[in-house]
Length: 551
Image (cartoon, rainbow, N blue to C red; front, side):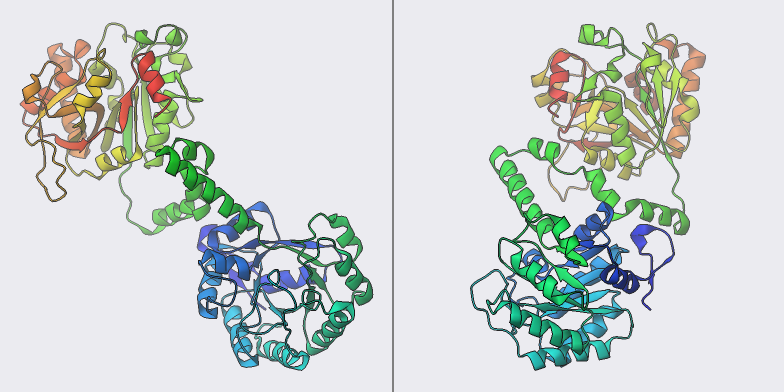
């Protein structure tokens, strides 16, 4: 009996007997349903939806491989696709094996290989190799009955699992040979050992199918594929005693429609705005791929990497947003259905940063989000940014991030910063002049660096931050600090020490983050610069908010 240890994406160990489960579907008095899939992803979606099994469609697999449904893909190439599908799922798979990829010898070898890969059942059709799709042309030639019966017998003799099923697909109605020939062939295949009969038709009504099931009278399980006669109520098939219904190719066809539209929109618009609003979230891709299980496995098997903490400075009201911040701070202003802070926290979470402390101040009770901690700067109206940071000094341990609460950035920006191994690292936008030309209302944290930004891929020179000051002469400016920095364990200790020193000398209360960095530099620190070229923004006024909603 076939046993399958639950696959890696499932994250647990158990025994699933796929061949037995498929055999139960075939013999159940209730009509069962299986859905087409053509790769590991679509097979996962079929199982996730709730279907009892998967139909590995020959048409769909071939088309997904970019070839015709005429045996242009070899059986070993199809077998590789099936292996991914079986590994990705726990439900049984019925394989559309066309004519069996050759004579009886090819078919019995195929059966052996399918069982090795935990496939539950195979369906072969009584046409000639190479096959032609049933919906193409007229009067397709059929295989000799005795030759096809020998193929069925060879497959049944070759199976090493008693519950593995061979389904014989009768094409007599497709070829126009009539009901009597369909019944004659079905009976021969049944006597040869077929576990079920798939009776196929390309008529737009189900009259041929229902006539067959009436005459067949449940001599063995019946399988149908109502692609052409889709308007027939499913209850009619239940009443006729159909055991298994295959929805044969609609996932592939849906994918073609969606990919064409997405490609067209991106091609015509030359941006991703429509696509990002209409396709699956990237997070959904990671979920269905099983990344959570991999993360759990990494926790078990890999040396633990220190958690990265983040402190978000979000105490200010943001008066330039006027009425929008009357009852909430700037960080909670809506940006396309989500508060700005929620989007920022989501960016941190997506990068694996989950220990977040948000420093609140104005309307602190409105700042909330699952999984974050908050501390309040009660003197937010009269104090500076470093005073807010000091309120969360207990979170500045190990590897730490410090971020303004009013910024948005693309994921690669944070990933670049996290990949930097310096004790102190700051993200600097080398396109600061372009940003300043967009809005002149805000104060810009201009920076001077030891090395300017270079677009040369082979330029490996590392840039260090030498000064940060909004009044730097333009000739000395190499970029703008965007309000995002990272500190290693050693860097966090240096940061803590500097905050303590500022508390002692009385400068803590009104100091800005630029003051803090300059003091660190004066004391010998050498913050490394992570250059970017745009792909971020901060929200200070209504104009910035409008830009954020299109970001």
